[in-house]
Image 1 (cartoon, rainbow, N blue to C red):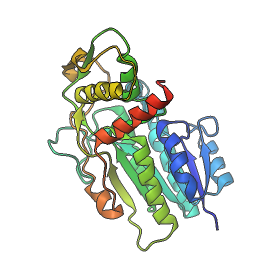
Image 2: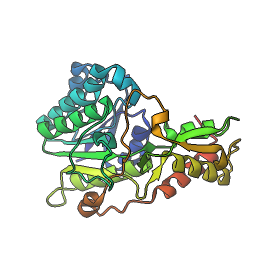
Image 3: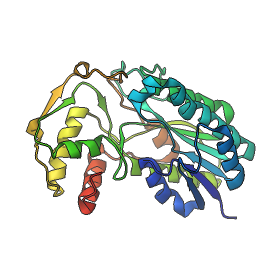
Length: 302
């Protein structure tokens, strides 16, 4: 019997890639904000009842870190309460619940990459809402996968990579944070790992390793190093830029008066994922290079 997958967040950069990666696994119903507003529980329940999915993949989230400080109620509603409702609806159907979380659940004080069992201590409201979403899924549905991701970008949608490409076309030199580190991770890679994990679930291959996993590219960089790499590789890909890496200056995060504090160390240890699913993470250089080549091929900088 053909399996049914319900995907929420179809219009985001991860949702865009998930539509591609999940398509071979069954009938995918992809819902966006216009199809289901996560602020309304009845819309969520109505959607699940109509679609009758075997798997729910939730790529919908409120990712505006600064705005979450201004509207914590909305952040908690979308990133936690609605997620718990989806997980409970999945449990009632005996369905797998797949959800995505963030490196922002950590305070960044650890010097080494974070493992899944490290204590979560978010510095900002976004991180607190994502942590609450994790716990809501865990409480509502034992049949779950939660993937914590780091510094996500994609060919489609908005990200630091896209913003940097636009900034590199302007004449003014750039100031980019140099004392926060993470692993830039391609949304396409996250989507492919998700499809691998969902396929294993649908095929019923023995004891299934439900649970919480870190999912990011290998290696790490500061935002400044990431920006300089984008500048070099974009030129090699044939994109017309005004600025060079020499025009990008590293500054401390303290020089940016953001409402939301961010972790200084956002690197994630993905060893548990490798052991459970046999996944070997690509270096972040490879994903960024591939994404820039794709962008150069379409000249799609928005």
